[in-house]
Image (tube, rainbow, N blue to C red; front, side):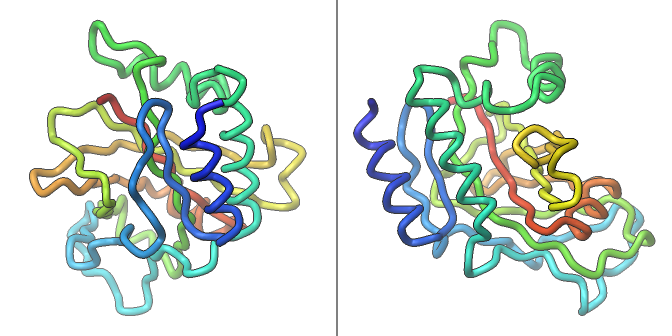
Length: 203
């Protein structure tokens, strides 16, 4: 067992905070230094974001997010790559977008955070949201964002009760990550009982 991973997960579950870990190297993140860069939020239609729109990392991590973290931990301690935790259709969609010479096994999972979306308006279209983590990312890295939505009455329909959606993500010059949330993703997150965002990336 990877001792650092056991320590990270144990501490995070005990504190019920945002979680961050990787297949190869542990992330340095905590809930206090993962944030949304609010001034960077942009809509694809150019419509200004209203004051009541909320995109936030909650102070208290929902129980379902902690459950997913534990399941991811169980996956990696069995010697499997973290990507293997996610549904096959998600794995296939990611594989189709990988650069030549890069495989699914090359992807690390460094971040998984709880996310809240409220008061989305269709007039916004897609929305770009920039996330700042303690881990610094580079524009040349291959990055994928996975939005996980849990809805209690749909739990039987989705593996582990969570429906995952693949979103475009790109590293910025300042080390942040810009994630493009589609209309469907935003609506799903707003309707969910709990939402989470996972970041997969190459080294």
